[in-house]
Image 1 (tube, rainbow over the protein chains, first blue to last red):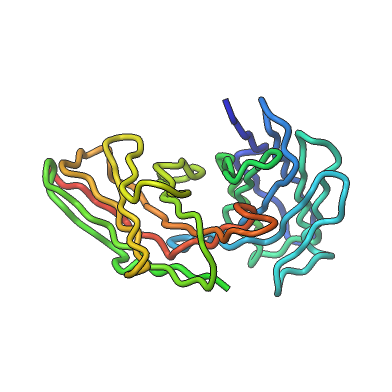
Image 2: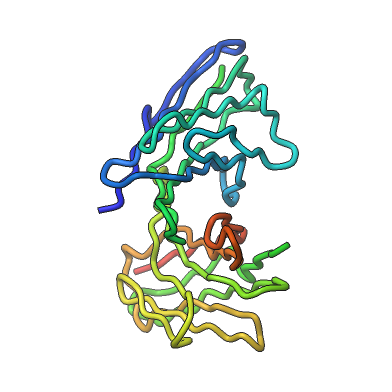
Length: 115
Length: 116
């Protein structure tokens, strides 16, 4: 149980275009989802926290107009990188938490490369 | 605000040797503590967690960790490692509270490399 999927697993896009990444909880209802960014050889940095049906809470320094997060249902959250640039290339990982559970379950990640 | 320090960025060991990956944290309140493993180009897998109770926590793949409140540490150990344990290991902390467990702060990671 507690499986989280991400789609796509990798994506290459041209500079200036937008790309959407999906995060799904497959066997539980995710009241809260988290989006992380990980640069090579570095740790995970929390970008934003989203609760189902509410606006996402962004961490300091994360541009909310650039990284659009939608958590429209209890099993799906999306991250849209708008007007992507090469510096947005990174590994994006989502996690999900259900109800009062303390534990986050992580997706397999999405490798974004902007050319 | 909480913070996590993993004292070693890289730990090379030989197969079947014991290993300890060190983690220290700072927080003004009580915390939950976690160790995760990440294989290349994959997400994170939970190894073990400390919530309360016994300070010695056993996890998957033969790993264990001990919570030491006085030293604010949560070191990860395995008595005998395998080649397949080669991966990046992350220590993480979450503070208790209304949103307990809702916000994880990660350490910088420790690359464990097991050599034959």
